Image 1: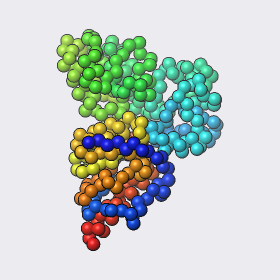
Image 2 (image 1 turned 180 degrees about the vertical axis):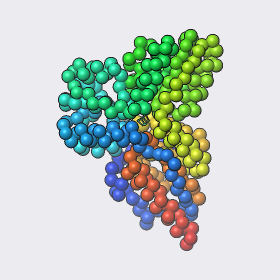
Image 3 (image 1 turned 60 degrees about the horizontal axis):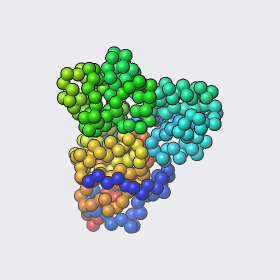
Image 4 (image 1 turned 90 degrees about the horizontal axis):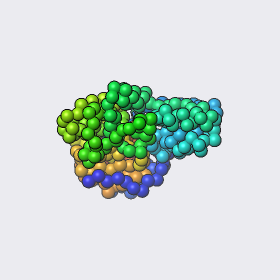
Length: 315
Ligand code: SF4
């Protein structure tokens, strides 16, 4: 069962939600293990650092969510950074494109409005853009494995004359036959899913040439692999990340294939004592939009519970 915590209460202060030891009905034994790779990737971290640096020099608007984490966005807003969805709504001179990147069409719209465009596009998203451009230039019909409407997928597709987006097997069954398919992926897609869909395209269109360029980024692969290893060893897994964070949802889904009890939370406020029972091994992982201070607060909460567990079993 994959349980997504629904009642999110945003929390920046890791000290304000410590476990109340007196109120714990702790299990007898509990162990907490942390994934080998988890949390914020360099692309998101660099984009946040750039936004903070620039906002100290001049008023700044960010186009779309700089990071899919409400807690971090609240910190940025508190520093005077404005967030808008459309360039037409921007009232500052400078606008920043997020790590997810943008199409040339979207950048052109912003420049045509007289805005100074600051790009924080992750270099690995640029690799995906170049891959798609190469496939098109070489005569392949582009197919993007990703989530329709996601900001990165919009950036990858908006400049294309024609393309398809696939995420599920049924999407592949909806494709028209082409002589040459060129497949690339949203950088945060699980590589297993991407390879499966590429194989399915090859099976469905045996006469077509299918070329695949792997654009899933290394931090995503590391976190996915580490999450699988973690979920295999755990009886319950806690996945930390924004409610709208695609890669966090993918991590939770991946963990759900190896562990029956998976909870996607945004902060310690979402943790529930009833999720944990005697002798649990609790695995902790986090999406690429999760800052270390939130992960550390969750780990501290779980460690306090585990300590209570040990103390209760020793008594
Ligand atoms: Fe870059 Fe990957 Fe992070 Fe996206 S998830 S910002 S591609 S490192």
